[in-house]
Length: 249
Image 1: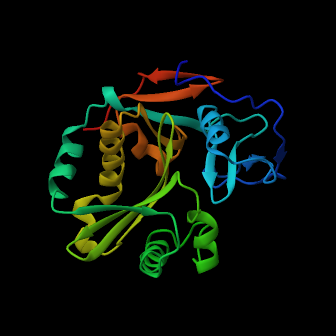
Image 2: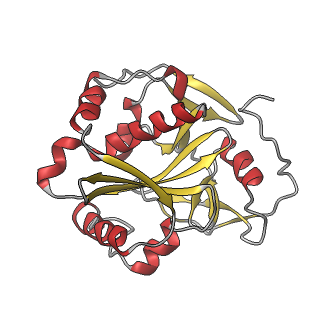
């Protein structure tokens, strides 16, 4: 069976729509989100199938945008075997060759939260996730499931970044990355290196894709996703190669 085909029937699952709320990415737009009923099974098979249809995970919730009259949010993924790093991405990989990568379960760790708190306060003080709190962090990024993982990036013993991701049957799903916001680490481009590290991990495990969540063509905050080439986008229930924009160097 193709990795693009959901393996588990989902037509009998129950979903809920949120009330319209202000869109976090497009000014002046309203957004509506479709959630899997929290009482439904969140087993690996269901998650694998829904991920192929553009669903993402936040804490215990599986969701996707479902906005009336708007389809700007597009699910994107990297086909691992065909990935071609740009010159800049190769430079980023070399700059971070001295980091240790350590995989851990997605459980609460005070050291992780301290880094997350600094990251949100410096980088996202004007966003929906400000102000950060331990409860917010737990709800968003911790989950006691075998597929939910955290990847630490350490220089010696110093924690520089943490990438939350899920291990699916057909790929790795990047959930969120946070890193030390101090200016001395900017040249490392730790967010880029986190994605490259997931691509490398997927390749080692023989997994075909790395899922990057949603991309909006007109949203500056999401423009970085176009730099990973080739890139596949979800149209309806079918994934196709994105060919119509130039790759970043």
